[in-house]
Image (cartoon, rainbow, N blue to C red; front, side, top):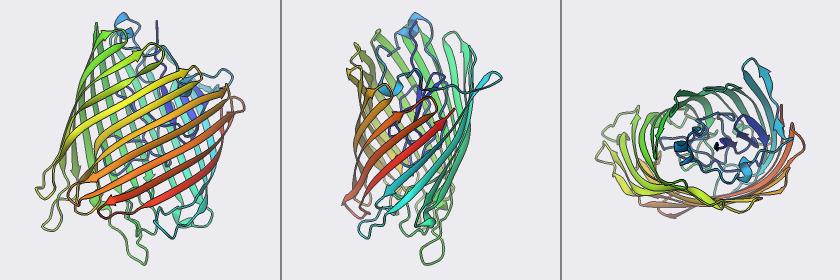
Length: 470
C-alpha cells in the first residue's frame, strides 16, 4: 500500500507537519496550494475566494490531518509518492514528540524572530528602516485515531517595532479541522478558522495615509468531499469567508473608512479526475464564486458585488521518480452587478510541478492566473498573473537550504493600470535536536506601477529565528 505524505508548511514558524509528525524545517518555504489539501488560513490579500499565503505573518493550522490515500488499487491510480520532497521528508531524531492528552497529541511551540526591514512603510523614497521583534506562540492538538481525524490549533503573532511603535500589531487566531471516513471510498474533510489579521503595508489596497496598519477579522469555513471508484475520482468543494475591516486613524487626524471592503465570499467547485494510467490522470474542474459586499451601490459609488466562473482542464502526473505535479488551463470570468464596473474575463491557469534532480534537491515551479478584488477607487477587481520557483536542498540531514524567486503582474482595466511585482529570497535552517531549530533568511520584494497611477516600492528584509517545540 502506498500512502501520500500530507504536509502543512508555515512560512515563518519553520514547521512542517508530515502525517502526525512535526519537524522543524526551512522557514521561508512557500505554501503550495493544490486541489486536494486544505490550505492554511494566512494573511489574506484584498480579494480572492480562498485565503492565500503571504510573505507576511500568517495564522493558520500548523497540524492538520487531511484525507489519506485509500488502501485500494483505485487509490493507487492517483498516488504521486515515488519521491519525497525535501520539505516533506521525515527527519528521524528531529520530530517533536508531542504531549499525550487522551486520544490526542498536543504540540506546543514558540518562535522568536528578529527582523530588519529597510522600508517598513513600503514607500518610494523617504524609506524608513526598523528592527522588528516577532514572537509566535502556538499550540496544535491532533487526534491519534486509526479512523477519522480531529484537530485544533491556536496561535498569536506579536510584532513589536523598536522605533515605530505605531506599527506594532498583534494577530491571533484559532480553528478546528477534521476528516470523516464515511465509506471505504468516500471521505469528507473540513475546517473552520477565525483570525484577527493585519494587512501588510506592501498590499496594493493598504491606505498609504494610514497612521497605523489596517486590521481585519477573517472567518473561514471549508468543506471537501471526495469519492474514488475504479479510474474515476469525484471531488466537491465549498468555501465561505467573511471579511470585516477596521478603519485605521489617518495621519493628521480623522480615520480612513475601510468598511466598504466588508464582504462575504462564497465558492463552490466540482472536479472529476480520470486515471488514464497509474501515473497520469486528466481532470475537468468548474469553480464558481459569489462576492457580496455590505455596502450597496449609490449614485456616486459603484456597487462591488460580483459573480465569477472558472473552467479548467488539466493533468495530474508523475513521470518516474523525477517529476510530479499538476497543470491546468482554461477560462475565467468575473461579472459585476453594477454596470459602471467592467467585467473581467480571459485565460485562466494553475500549475504546480516538482522536479527532483537528486534525492537531496527539490525544485518546485508554480503558476496561477486569478481575479482578485480591489479596494482601489474606480475599479472592482484586477487580473493577477503569477509564476514562481523554489529550490530546497538538504545539505545535511539537519541543514536545509532554500532559494525562491517569483514574478507577478496585476492588470486593472478601467483605470488602465498595470503593476509588476518581483520577489526573491534565501534561507538556511539548522536543526539542533527535536526541540530547537535556528533559521536565517533574506527576502526582497518590489512593486513597480508601469502603467497608470500606483505606489512603487522595494523592500529588503533580513531575519533570524529561534524555534522551540515539544
